Image 1: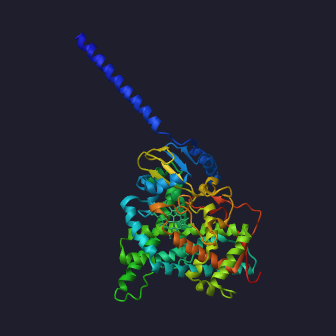
Image 2: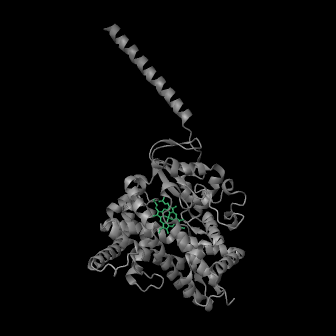
Length: 505
Ligand code: HEM
């Protein structure tokens, strides 16, 4: 008995020692294998630096290139290293995505749209919408819409110029780009520029409120409880989504009826807007259509408006560049004189836009320094090692940073912080693009921005008309202009300028 007891005891000790030895060896091996990026702070530092968030992150990026911020739930890895960006956005694409984390935060508003989903759900939508965005019909129709809307905007600017009033260009751009994307998406005039459509105005306000409130969830630890109890910001979010949904579903049902009534006379309905085209070729499920249109509207309205605002700001700060753009537009359009803004806008052809390499470069240089989406995060789906040799764990959030990257000397050289459109031109003055893993403003890889060409066309049409007709100057040269920290890079407090008629200056 004694013998068997002592044998069992010895065997147990031996077994435990073996397990412990192998565990220690494994741990050592793992520690040797896994090294993690340096910890630069915690998410408390983000909150403390909230108003200057992108400056703070650019400083950290210059110091570490890639670093970790600790949070109670997961590590956040922020990277400005092009090789890492290429790896997460392209090389190992399937291992990084929106994940359940982003989906749970965004789906109450953005539904199952392209921005919230991964895998097959994403692939199916990407395929359908890539096709739509590449059609000549959409290209032609959207150009007509952009030309009409910039003519409206130019008339407002003209009145302000005549009466020497200052105006908030960012506010005007936000209204005009919303009207544009809405017309392209639904085929309906929202007219937020003049405010003639009361329901449309309510929709626009509710859309903006819902976008802000849904993003607020990223910093609100209690949002799920608040949603359950229907209180505070969550109650407001629900109310705003209801306003958006009522408006959108009404438009979808009207369009379905319109199409049904005109079945025998298909010439009556023009198949130009995205909704009509989807109804005819893809799907008639109202929820799917609602999600698709909300996602396009969200993607297409503030991005181009904020870029155009920073662009005008840059041109006010660099009058020589403003002058060069105006000369290029004049030569490319062969417009010695512009007597009528509407006529000039209508006559602006794609061939003329294609000749405007300097304008393209100046807009791109603006986006390098002021990217509309200043940072963008992906969830890691399984443990991995990045090209720089450091490890990431399943469920970590990896953030690539277009704002910080645009200002890194190790990417752009010593003049990284200077506004210099020439860096985008070759010796013949032709635009030359950069690696999308260095210039990350439109994302890269399979999920690269679907609306990039659409956005450039809109921004070039708007800029060409406005700069051919007006000179812009800041209303107060000494006032500091900076961003407001939110999902898109808006100018805090708007962009207040004066315009002067070019021919009359
Ligand atoms: C200056 C203008 C723009 C910039 C800087 C920009 C930037 C971006 C970025 C960074 C993403 C990735 C977002 C993510 O991780 O989900 C994205 C995706 C997307 N963008 Fe844009 N965007 C612009 C304009 C537009 C416009 C005008 C449209 C359409 C009307 C559009 C449609 C989309 C769509 C549909 C996606 C989702 C692609 C996917 O997940 O497969 N974008 N864009």
